[in-house]
Amino acid sequence: AACPGDEVEDLFELLRDVKEQFPEVQAVSSGAVLSTYQRLRVENVCARLGLTSLAYLWQRPQDEVLDSMVQDEVEAVLVKVASMGLKPAYLGRTIQDLQPTFEDLHEQFG
Image (tube, rainbow, N blue to C red; front, side):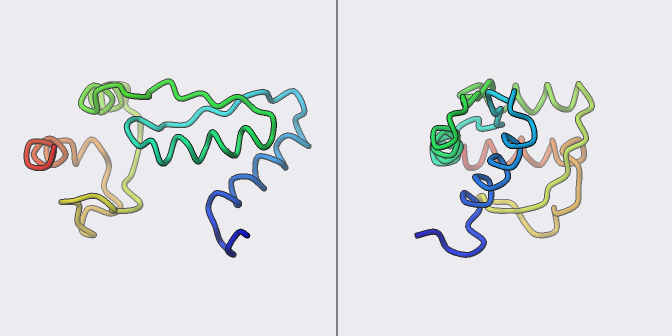
């Protein structure tokens, strides 16, 4: 049984509502790069709803993804820290600002 606030079930409910409002929707694109755990969670929800899961960034080198996002001026802001080396002080900062830090952390932790 799902726990209250379970993000997978929240995603399921959101996508179910999207399908009801926009029945032509056939797929969901996620930003999973290396986390099998995250990719499988999205795939599971999609399978339950008869949607196709698209993971165009899957297994691309992280430095290439970051460089591309910075170059394309994607405005992404850190909202959660859950990896080794990331600190709460980084919350609210952009990936452009944190790119040198991310590169240092990648050298330290892989």
